[in-house]
Length: 524
Image (cartoon, rainbow, N blue to C red; front, side, top):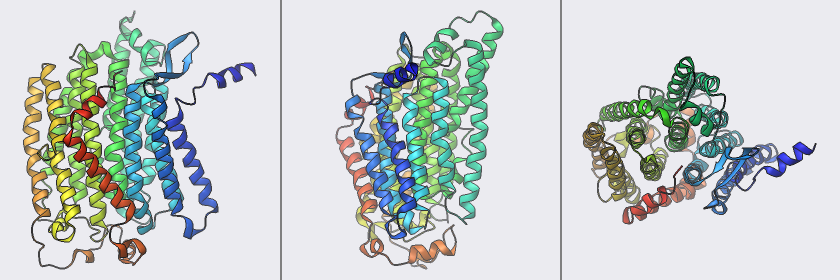
């Protein structure tokens, strides 16, 4: 009994507050769903949104505190959970991204007839796992957090019941993710067998001096298999094949959530295992990540080029391929960390780029959600003449696309790309910097092509509202049905998400150094 009491007293609940609050609110939503009448179900969305805001605010007392918990007795530096600067920055990114996703979801859940309680419970559960992962400092907690973030996401992708595309997307996402998890678990078991520990700091120490060559071989296989598992979560090629179909089949807010929060989870895990767990294998994972970055950005941008606004190609599919290309850029500083004497600077470059990408990509998905209200097919052609119909939305989307392309007035996008480019050059990866420069030029074409479509005159054709969406006639009827939001134009939560993303993008473009200064605190 006394040992249990000692354990409870040693738990730092303040440090654990961000993922704990998110998980508790998820349970509150699930229980409240049992008692609320149908007419009051929308209240669950506002409870979830408030819970995510509260979880984000709980980060404030942790700034500069460096709290740790679940530590080995007598070893304060060997812990399972650390609320250090790196964890706090990624937790902020995750919770802010989930908050914007919640604002996008409030109207989508109602219009598409999604099960309200299940949706919000799953979203909050996934966000809780995503908030736990960057603070995890042992391989077991990393794997658990990764699965807590991923398993609810499978269900969210397939939550549109009766929708064939949604079911297929969820199945592909699930099967490929389970295979990647199995590979990663095999790698973790190899590492445990070779080093005798799961704590990242102890694994790092053990890998520097393995007494038996056979253990070194086992550890090398474990390192490779663990990296493969995290490469899948980051949508790095050739582990990216699930992305386009999953994004198209998922509800639009969930596609945006996966593109931002899902990537944050994958990249934070990849940073932790490489820089903290496997620094002695930098000569292995550094070149591997460099090749992975080059292939990923090339595959993503080349596939995005095939999405033609003059054909019935999906805007969400273009954003999906764009996210694969952006994942390649995010991998560049990680590869550079394998060559640098001080990998912390390279990590800061990845975090800075991730923050920029999160803001503008969720903003683009927010405008896509607005267009989907009247054009459910969400084709690129449906954006033709958007400036005539909704000038502010068109200007916002144009700004987001220019940020992703790295062109003025999207200064923050240009700044982030320069930071990543300089990380590659400083690490001596000149060939990777050249590949990145070529891919940035390629990406300009499809980003500018979509931007130009927004300001062209609308074609005289059958209204796009008549196009039946992938969800079938039931979804068309739901979208066409009158309602308080539809009569008022843009729903208030959706408008809030667009305004927040635009305001953040403009503010950061005016002072891009703030992103790097904020990200520079994310040092391990």
